[in-house]
Image (cartoon, rainbow, N blue to C red; front, side, top):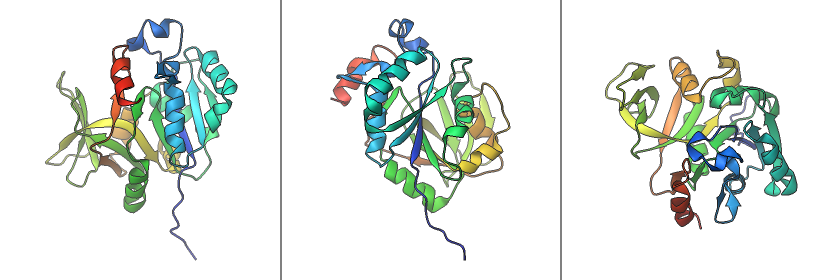
Length: 247
C-alpha cells in the first residue's frame, strides 16, 4: 500500500560562505553573516526566522572567517537550533557547489530548504511548502515582482523556463515557450532530496546554473509573494534600511 503522506522539511541550509565583497569594509575582518541588525546578526535572524516554521535543524556553510561563525554558533548554542557546519574553507564553491558539499548533512529522502544569510525576510514559508506539496515539483522557489537586473522567466503555470540579464541582454532558455514572465529570485527555496541524484556539476557552480539545467527535464515552480518584508543586506548602506524594516 502506497501513501502520499507529506513529509515537511526539518532541515535548512543557510548560505554563509560568501566573501561579502559588496559589504566591505566590514568583511575585511568579519564574515557578512555576522553583520548586526538591531542587535542581532544576520545569521541569528535567519535561524530564528526558520524556527517560526518548525525548522530547528540548520546547516551553515562557512568559508570567509569561518572560525568566527563557528565560534558564534557555539557561544550562542545555535540560538536554540541544532546547527551543523559545512566546512568550505578549502575553496569557494558558490551556492550550488555549497549545496552539493553539504549533502552528507541532510536527512536522506527528506525535503529541505535553503536561504541566504544576507537576505532578511518574513515571507510565508508555510505558503511555499503548501504550494510545493500541492504541485509536487522537484524545486519550489519564492519569487516576486521587485526590480532587479536579472530575472528568472516563468510560463503561465509558474514553471521555470529561463533566465535573463536585462543589463547585458543575455538570455538563457531551458524550455522555449511564450509568453514568459520575468520575476525576481528571492532566495527562499524548497527542494526534494532527489535533486542530489540529478546534479551534473562538481566544484564551484551557482544554484541558478543548476536550476536552468534541471528545468530542461524537471518541473521547477515559482511562487510569487507580495506584501512581505524582503531586503538584500548586501551593502553597508542596506543596514539602515534593514534596521527600519526589522526592528
